[in-house]
Length: 235
Image 1: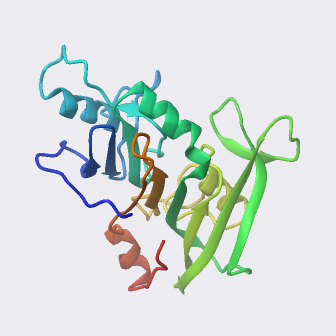
Image 2 (image 1 turned 135 degrees about the vertical axis):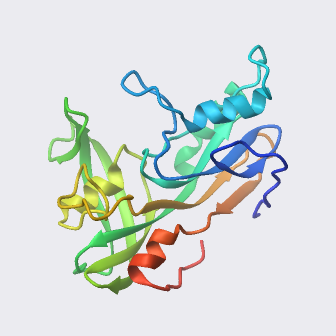
């Protein structure tokens, strides 16, 4: 089933797509962290949702539980739980969820459809890379379909078959097609202020009802500005 948005007075800074007694689904803008870290204490989606659930009462026991993350510069769908039990179910069932992304990458793809697979590892500088050594990396799969080519850019629809850190960005960069606006894994990106990577849709099993819930977001204006109009396959 497709769950309909039910926000009344939503959290400030993110778009609330759905809320019930057990889960929250939001649309995260580019530039906002999912959660804080020791290196970065800036405003996060997690903090925004905690404030929203506590309704101004810092002693409230209500809180949001992180199920998964998006990079700071990636926009799109994020799922949060409202209890530890719901979080644990969603994380244990995460491989059964369906996650689609939209990305703009540089260059002409020799194969309009395919799957990029490699073992991904992270170095001391927090950069992710592919390694031939299965003992060092985690096997990762990124399935893609070309939607449109325009002015040296390729618009691709992506099914994330595994969910590793920076997976999409690294896989396309190592193939010679970095994501537009990726300053970490691409070169000469100064003319593109935002990363053209968007978590477009998510389908998952509800932790209590067992129903399959599906959500889709609006596509950021950046994509249309760079490649014009396009038609996307339904998920």
